[in-house]
Length: 121
Image (cartoon, rainbow, N blue to C red; front, side, top):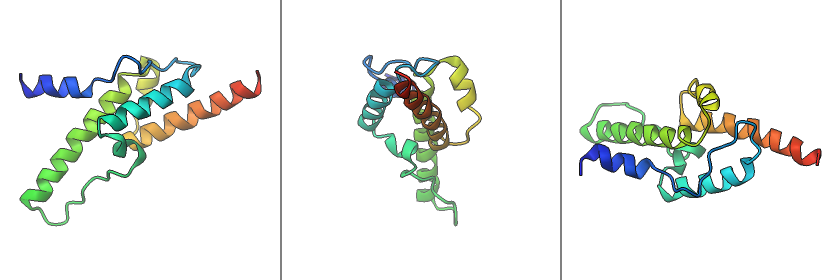
């Protein structure tokens, strides 16, 4: 099995993680299942900011390798997120430079919408 195939399989989220509805009607269950699945893949640190990009102070083989790993994992995390949102939302999220920033924007938008919807029940 090629490394591309392995990466594609590890980036895939389980079927119980729904695609976010464009209006955010399923935000609560999406958020719960998405976070759980991403944590299971070991990539949640890219969403909450606890896995920070290494700073290249003096280029060593180890540090360059760490940076490469971080960028690979960041791309994997971004793929997980973009695969579970509609195209219209994905296009908005692509403007953010990091997965952490994209997740924060998504979370802010749909937590507010979800709160508004609950208030108006």
